[in-house]
Every structure is written in structure tokens, then in C-alpha cells.
Length: 318
Image (cartoon, rainbow, N blue to C red; front, side):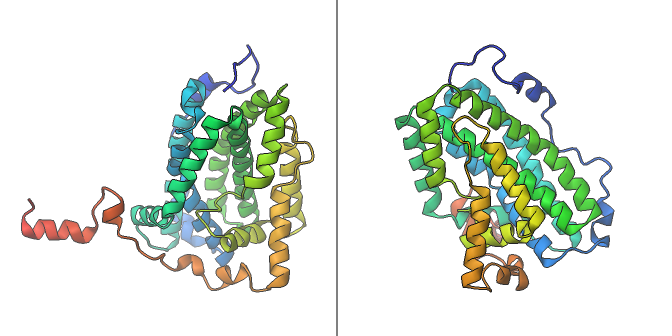
């Protein structure tokens, strides 16, 4: 990252390191999770959000092959950020399990990652190459980080509004507090990098208009991304929230008037106009509950399947 000027950012990394911790769920009424009903749309969103929170370690691996690994402030943030995001995914999974939907969290995470196939490796290599070839590439991933964190906390707020579930409101409200700190870091870091840097501003805007995609796209397909966007934001209040999000990101140097989240919603609406069943069919048919095609976890991770463990126990091991 660029050389910091004294007092140049309102985000204190020292303070953040001191307060960073596992998500505090003390007093959360877990025993009442199943007492209030959730719609199919609510459940679709919860599965989507859990999968993306659990994907953070892979996203972190992309950042750590870039110039980011040279900045001790950024790597300190990423270490804390990754730990906090771990507990977001864990607690969303716990909520879904307590609601009555059973799945093995570790198997689900392993299979979601395995289904990315070659895509993850190609993405990692292109990110690494872009970072080392382009001096101001950091401005792009810091800005994307700010957009994604703000979009995430906005999405959680929309799900609170849509679901009306008291325990989910409490859980997501606690997660939102973490996401606000994450957004503050990315936003202030991006602002610092972009301020007085015309080249970085031009590149940032050019890249965002060409490579940015909504949170989760890539892990999820386009129809799944549209289903989330339409369920949460396809009303007057939701659209206003996305316009406000774009306006806030537009406060970064060189990004005035940028339209990203609202444009994603409008494009999703256009696809529905062409095919009224698009996106909504995933929610209505409860496609979120269908197990993903299983990948040979044992070949892709160091974990063995339960069947392997049983065979070893019977055979006596090596």
C-alpha cells in the first residue's frame, strides 16, 4: 500500500486488533430458532450467505499472492477479518441446523469449494499477475472489498426486514457490527490510496466497470445471484438501499456517479422480463435444499470421508 501520512485514516488498526474476536452470541435465543417460520426465500438467502461467508479463506488466498502480502497493516487486518468471517459462517450454519435443515457443515464447505474446479486456480493466478504488473492494482481490490462488505451488511439488513424472524434479527445484527468495521477498513484504505492519485482513480473506475461482480458470483451462478438480489431488493425500499450503497461508494476519489449494485438489480429485472421463471424458480422449487453434486472430498482435501474412517477402523489401519 502507499505510504501513510500521520493521521491519514480514521480506521485504527491497533484498536481493531485489540477488539477483534469470535462473534459474541451470548444470550442469543438459539432454543427459539424453530419457533418462528421462514419463507423459502429467507432460507435460500441464508444458504447463499452461509456459503459465501465460508468461502472467505479462499478469497484470502487470492489477496495473499498480491502486493497485499507486503503491507503489515493490511495483513494484520486480513488475519483478524478472516477469523471473524469464520464465525459468521459457523453461526449461520448453526442457525439453519437448529431450524431443522440437517447437513454436515464441513462436507458442504468442501464440496462447494471442490465444485469451483479449475476456475479458482485461474482466478488466483490472474489476480496475482494483475497485482504485480499494475502498481495501483491494490486500489481495485480495496475498493471491491469496500463494496462487498457494504453490500453484505446491506443484504443482512434486508433479510432482517424480509424475514421478521426475531432470533435471526439478533444474530444478523451482531454480524452486521463486524461487517461495518470491515467496511470501514476497506473504505478508508481505498480512499487513502486513491486520494491525489489520478492514475489509480482512472484504473479503479475502468476495472470496476469491467471485472466487478456481485458478492458470491463465481461461487454461485448468475441465476442464484439474481435470485438473492431480487428477493432482497426488488421493491422500492430495496432499490433505494442499493442506490444509497452506490452513492456511498461514489464518495471515493474518482468514483463519483458509479453504478454497480443498482445496475446489477436492473439487469436481474431485465432477465426476469425476458423469462418470468428466471431466478424465482430456484426459490420456489427449493433448489437451495438439493445437495450439490458430491466431489471426491478425500482427493481434494486432507480430510478423509466417514467411510474411509470406518474402513480403517475395521482393517486396523496401516
